[in-house]
Length: 214
Image (tube, rainbow, N blue to C red; front, top):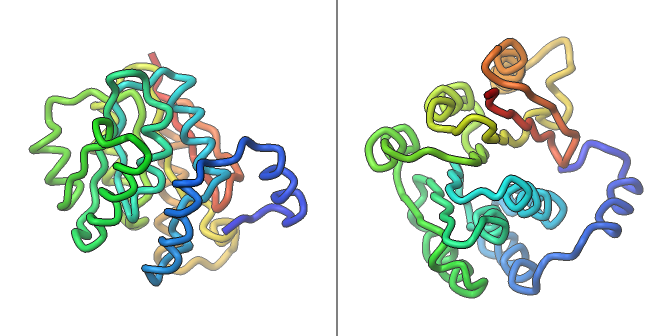
């Protein structure tokens, strides 16, 4: 979902490097084989994920919320040689689709898939990891928890990205439902955290870019 003018969004996409044919196919199948195809990051945001991973020369990346693997592949396309993308999702049913397309995009050695709850995976299987980049795109009610889980596991100068933080524009409405209120509270929490510097970008449904201070 994009919140800026449709014509401007289309122009931005036209002026952005196109994604690969394999990602085109994965995006198509995500809509065809699931009932939540709108959860795919899409080519525009996908290119941003690839570029930010490359720009900071990320070698160790964490993704919370895999879905069909589109964003994990985009992140893997940008990681440095020998880098890894650790992606977590409790939904094991889509794992075959993730594995299929990770293989098709030559990222088999870069993407590590974990099926389970993020809190358990992070505190148990990834307890000794330090990350250059974290992408949070999971259950919105737990964004604050996920941030607390990863902030001490991100290197100084590292980046945390949180998706859907404008929540269809509802965060600016006077009356908010429970989920919107939790997202707005998360945004405010980050704004008040002296450990980080942040910028909220109007990419698709809002992308909060958080850098851990040195």
